[in-house]
Amino acid sequence: MACYEIANTTSTTNNGSIAELLKRIDKMQKDAIAANAVGTCNTCVIAPVFNTKPIAVYLCNEALTAPIGNTTEFANRFRVEEVKGDVVILRLLTSVNDELTCTTYTITVRINCICCVQCFDPITCVINCALAA
Figure: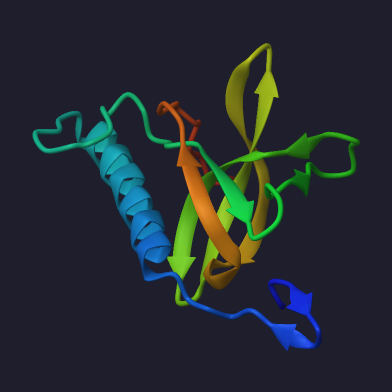
């Protein structure tokens, strides 16, 4: 799972600040879900009504996109599902009438491959058995 190769050299530089950002987003989303379950939140960064901070992920030379199932549609917005060591599990988001919604599809990306993350306004994804991490 290489990021990219130039003259037989693979880039594997770890970007700690991106890993920390992804971990913070993951924690904020989990806190919002927990606060919604309890019905109160005194210290949430994301309002409990929202449980997802959509992001765009940029690799060294392009924006990350992923096919949504067996369709011709591609996702370019994601929800952080979990950070595990040097990888992040991202849920694909789809846009319908300019409104982002969660899909049931995820991808795994090496954090070392991520050069930049762009954050967007929070949304609500229905969290059920199919989406729970």
